[in-house]
Image (cartoon, rainbow, N blue to C red; front, top):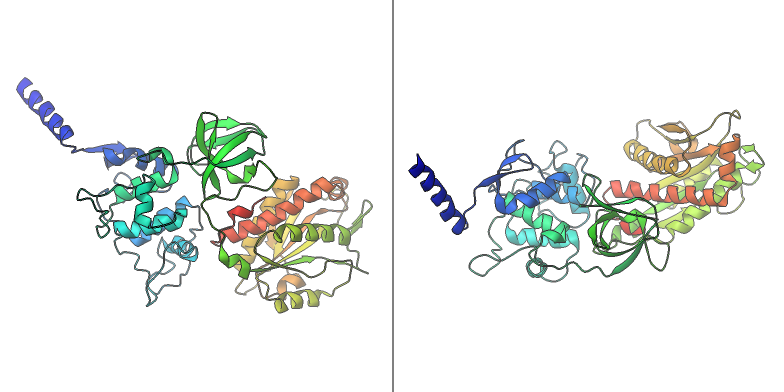
Length: 461
């Protein structure tokens, strides 16, 4: 027995000396090679990578284009909802369909000339380098960029192995290194951006999502140094702690504008999007009146503030009215159509009994091609408005309203609060609260576009 044990130990020492490593337990998988264990655990914590089964990663299996789109999409927090795609070989029923549409829309991956995506085709190391470079904004030769950053290493023969297929384990290693520089083969993170936190008790996390553990906390107005950003999270150094902070809670040290992601270029498609802002009522139509306020004034003020925020972006913005004038309901939707609007946001204030309170949003749910997007638009803005004023949530609901029913684009009608309620009205009378609500509507519009696969992170306030 002792001789057998001695032989086993000696054999293991030889394997170790030769660099031959057996599988280890990682992220619940029992077949992960030790060389990839840390990275697989990291990506699994962020719900980015998955196994072939609940206990098996199948690390040496080749990685397909559909799987790469999914892993990249999850990393960048893109819209992964299954949906119809532009490709003849990838239907809505494919689990990767949503992420494929999102990464293709962002220019990270593309299809073939005959309108196919080839979701089951194995990915090569050279293709992997191009995909990662596009996803994270690396410049120059993709393969050389990964080598320079310490994300990848060459093959034994001195080449990159461009034509070799990439395994699931190796891709996990490269992806984790791209996300978090602490896993790289050399120190390449450059904390060149001077940033300041905008809120107290702010979490610093080990990865770019709330799924990752908190590794530290900082207070408001704390100076940090920023490196790169991923999916709305910026990699920072705060004292001796490095990790990710939501970019939403950071500003530049010289201003109040949220720090744009360092590696993410502006989405050129935004300039082709026209947003219609519709402040309700106006002129002879005062709308609801209460607590010394007129609805037409409140919503015009809100619309103008949202318009000013949107003018700082590539979006094309049009207002149905920018002064105190009366416009017929039918002319509002007609204006939106004539301007080639892509979304329509109508702004109102509610009125009922003095006890009625809360924020609500409407969309038109009758059969038309924009029901889902109208609801999505309403839900995204509603969530932001609730966070801004913390009033009662009166939901996002269907409404048969003219400016929604007669429109030919995704459309939502917002009810900020009740002008007839003293508490709601007090917020409408406050410049600070109105600025807060306008910013919420603006960010809600960005949330909608982000959910549709657009890159809007640089523009959040």
